[in-house]
Image 1 (cartoon, helix red, strand yellow):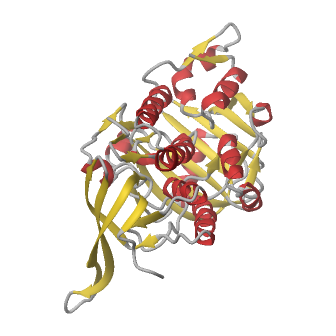
Image 2 (cartoon, rainbow, N blue to C red):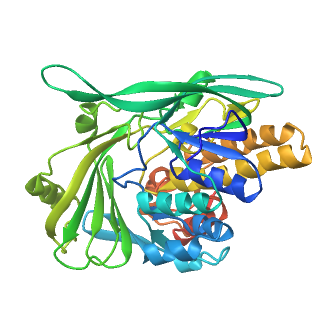
Image 3 (spheres, helix red, strand yellow):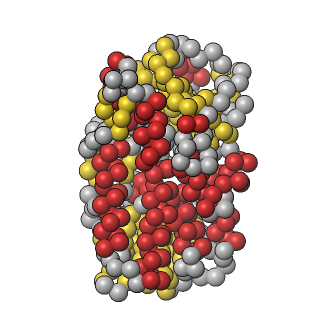
Length: 418
């Protein structure tokens, strides 16, 4: 594998789903791209898993939809519960805008694998073990210092491994994409603090083998102050995301709010997990045969003050984060990544004016102001049930869609997108 280039059209920081997709979209457009990530490899444990209909359509434009479908688990309905009572359902078949009227449960690590494989076929390899140090930009481009990391043994008499900087490379890029997660170093360098909107939340994510088949429906449970979600992943694997109460969440200290950065793996307590599920979802009859893993994850509802400056722009969790119930942050982030890549390509190949990035900024803020409930939201109609009306704010972040599809799902509950 050749060394990291000193000169490149676009440098992508972060090799999660959004960074990989932006790099792939650029490579497909003939743009020279390098992608770096400080991790040693892609995520071994998968968190986000719900792929929206619009995201499948996007993957189709990249030639990856069929592979995703072969690797994933199709879900056609979302059931909405309050305790034992089923309050409503969402039919994905009513999503008419694209060719994929359903949700796909696809583990994040598998999505990353598909994207990385396609990048390799186009001659682009992720530079694992490479960490961004500094960024400096002017009207002509961006200079980035990237550190190559190596593991070294330290300590006596008990040896342990630590990261050490093996070398530094000055990379000159015409544009930089920051896709490095909720604790984004790129965002910090740009001095674009996150603005929090609401209290942090914590979820206990439990992947397990059910005693019996849990079916092909996502189920969201609304409790007093909590929201939980059951996601089937196959006929033999399922996942509960159980929100901790406000008192429990207060004891969990999130480091940046990201799944990977804000999580702590705990020894699964099967009895406690079963008790929590039966208390909140008494209709759950499948039972738990085996707990494969469990982790506690912290989230903030937040948005960056700006989505970029000059020639450096943010996408994905680097610019926003919200509750995992509707899987909106990653899915919207993937659409952002493709959009940003397209704008950079137009700037490089067609000489498009810088205003196209001001438009990106405006559109990102408008969409996330809506999804975070800061502007607009769901409004009642004569068809709205009292329960749906009382849960309008929480339903907004629970619907597994965005854009026109979000409005379609809301209408099934008698609600309108304001």
